[in-house]
Amino acid sequence: MNMRSLVLMGLVAATLPMLAQAPAGDTIRSSESGGYGPAAVAGDNLFDGYFRTGAGVASAGGEMVSFDLGRNGHYRLGNEADTYGEIGWDKKVYDGKDGSAFFVHTMVNWYQPYSTGIASSVAPGVALEQAWVEGKGILGTSDAFKDADIWAGERFYNRQDVHMLDWKYLHTDGEGAGIENINVGFGKLAYAYMQYDGRSTSSIPAGSPATALPAGTRDVTNLHQIKLDDIDVNPGGKLYFALEFDTASPYKGPTSATAPYFDAVSNDSNNKGGWSIIGMHTQNLLGGSNHLVFQYATGAASGLGNGDQFGRALGSLNSGNKATRVIDEIAIQPTKTFGLEAVAALEKNKLDSGTALGTANGSWATLGVRGKLGVTDHFGVVAELGWEKTTLDTTAYTTALKMPLGDRTLNKETLALVWAPTSEFWSRPEIRIFYTNASWNNTAQGTVGGISYADKTSGSQFGVQTEVWF
Image (cartoon, rainbow, N blue to C red; front, top):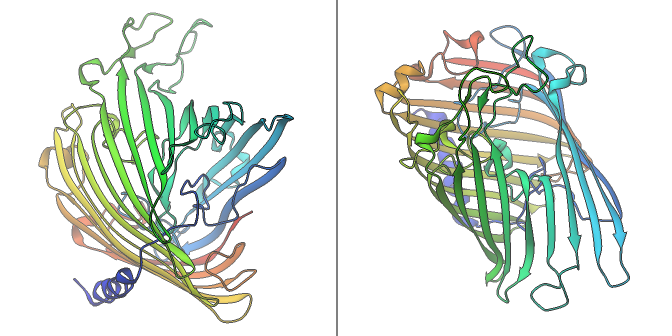
């Protein structure tokens, strides 16, 4: 391990024992701001959003890239080679005399890598990501249900994230329905049903009848999540639990290439479902918070937020999948002019794809810290250090994916000059001028930085970026 890694580990080790994190109140994070920006309170008519964009030049030539190992996000400061944005509109559409109310929530987002030009010029980069209706005060006046609400539609649901990694370690996004905020005395209970349709979006062959459907898998995964949170356990500390069950609804129809099915296939032999559990302790501390998280999952749930929106590992529903994860993430503001975010995480998994790839036993670990020092009311200096290691130890898996066997490590450092409304860590909008340096070992060569760095084990880039939530 080199000197930079030792310094990074020392910084994180010195910080972690002091802390144990959490935003006050609800632990749900529903937008890209990670719950650290202005609270999205359901008002009569609320407009909010997020975006990031910028430009940069890479040492290998051409536009900047993202230096990462392809697992669980990336250390994002000075390392985001894309434009991304969200625009949300929430409106109260009914206000009853009995205290009942109905709200409509909508959100459009867009995404485009820098290399493809102006984001708004490419329609596939724009999507209606949230469109759901919420009813409050309509389930009676008992102590258990007077503050409860029901909802249905498409939404970002129950997101938990590490902002500096742009990594959502829990995100049951999708279409469904549920009930929230049931008062059980010692906490709040919620239930949500979500559905994932595995149908491909591949194109329909030319000359097909109007009734033709796109080719691909027709299997459906049904997600049932029970959540219990807002449990007071110590001064400023709360517990949170979520239990998830994934069940399969395999496709039973024809699998011929005859219209209107066109290769409608099923993963029937591998549809075994699965389950996962997450426990989290949150603690208010030093003007901020700490999250200590434990996750365990099997079968269809073992992606733990990787892969698609339901975390299905490698697109598989095999019951042999298993994953375990421990995370400690800190976000504090001990003084007006100094703020800090840090993370330590470890993940181990066994993924059986049910195909020729066989079984992959792997692990991922990371240590990282980002600090901001305010120099004036609007100007500050930000530094971010990150270290990652992944291990793939099954030859069949790594050979099939043309990925090297063994440990892959990455070190990434960024220094940025920033301007924002205040000197606080989470103050946005923030305008940044940055320099980023990264290095990785020989095993990771060819897997970091894209084709520009395929024959290299280090790289750097500089550029400008803005990030804002409002």
